[in-house]
Length: 203
Image (cartoon, rainbow, N blue to C red):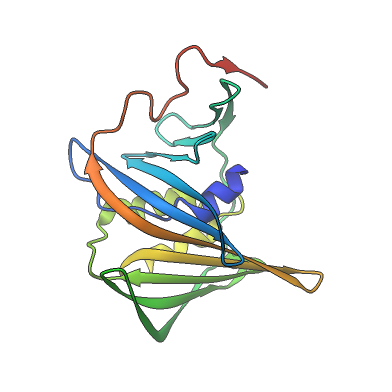
């Protein structure tokens, strides 16, 4: 999975960041309604990690680096965090609601130049407190090329439970969906936010 897909599909999923602990999420991912992978996400202050069992993508805003770790090949790449010009984002609330697990959710649409050619639907709940750390990290992620629409989170009420992103090309539509399965607040394992010792850096 590319760094852009990591940003689009996964890095929206945050909880308030309490002191001395990070947030761990288990996320189910789907492509055109077919399950593809279950991933583990960690969120700390100015950093996050997404692990699908083979590739761990680490965002370190505090270091200005992105690490893409291949856990089978025991290699990693180190990339510089990029910044993109801001684009206008439009948030459109709807009256659509649903019960997802124990959460009552409401659907929002994201449009405007920041959405580019994507159709974006977000389902959020006010049953989970979002916290200022959520908006702060979303604004940093929104500066990454291809992820400018994440600035919508500053205008949306509630915590996102489901994200649906669709792209139509040559008459065919692909929809990627991510859904929070569980969350916990705990200390992360060692080297969660860094390439493991002994791994080889590659260009």
